[in-house]
Length: 475
Ligand code: FDA
Image (spheres, rainbow, N blue to C red):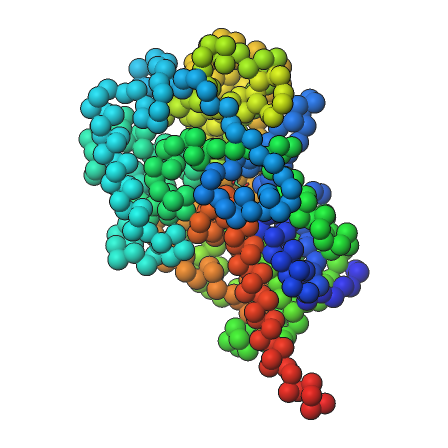
């Protein structure tokens, strides 16, 4: 085993971990980033499939995501707009594809007005929620004890309106069925993006992409660190610290030891920048406090298949379609033009979420592809059946993620454990985009959490220096 020493060990080379590492290094601290995979970026992965560049993970940037936009600027990365000229398509329960413009789907007048009414109610509730502390809302407990589906059923007897509203949070964001998370969790998701209306507005929430791919953010952040300070293929197995039976502030100054299969790194602080579902794959000695262990078990990642289909041309454009498409009743519940900047080929991206993903994962790869392409063809016509490149992102099968897009609490979890997850445990701090306020579940949130973890760590190292100074002088 090779032994190393650093001020701070960062576990995980995603956007959170690499942001924290860069900030700590800029503040003069020595760091090491230990990454389980053979690449940096975590849930950001820009890859070439049969010669076609595809964003396997996160890709879109919205105008409110100022932490990400600042980072893109600082790293010299340029963005371009998602193609959106032309009409969108909606498929209702009757299975008929209808063209429309604007945000509200072309349902019956009654359903449309119900959708607008529900958006209004949700916008009002969201405006009362602090995304940094949703558990502090006076009705937080009541909101956290009712599922989003049950709440929607209390609000409206129009099933199609309910399904459409559920789609924006359940299928499209948390990628869990609406009965599996609370109203409070839904409000947090919307508050983290500024309003519920922002989630409905595809031109806002899916505004821009990065030329060359969003994985360049972690790649460029990693390149700013010294080459020996980002170690790949190093899953962290154990974090060991002493005196942890004492209160958190009593362990300041005690060294902590982080072990992988090849390395033992001694440090003063550790940042565990991995999604909450993976925190418990690390052995902690002594163990994490009981409520922290409980809290981690109440957070889970959703499930979504991100499907790319590339064609020789973006044929839908000739047909006057933007490719923006929605249906709570289709296998692919939403789809968009995902053509790369400057390419003549056209690429569609579609999403299959939660229980619909379970169902198609039960099929053979050939049958699954057939079913998914048929769903795309329901929106765009038979040309969608013949892509030249086809790819399904399968993050649930990735050992170091295990789902997509991100983690959310089960019913009651946010009020029971939400505040606690931000607290350090001795010299260890935890965070990822899954614990963000603004930008929750997004790269913007990862950057914000990375900055916060770095700032807290820098402060705690500075106060430790203050404590140690008289001893150093006396000796
Ligand atoms: P992330 O999971 O990226 O990083 C954690 C790292 O820790 C990983 O590299 C992992 O390998 C490593 N790790 C885990 N356990 C370890 C251990 N024991 N030892 C060492 N390393 C360990 N966002 C957005 O803004 N716009 C978008 O369009 C999308 N779309 C999207 C699509 C898909 C398919 C996915 C999966 C995700 C998105 N997202 C997104 C979400 C976005 O990608 C995500 O929120 C951030 O990239 C998360 O960054 P983090 O660094 O917080 O975690």
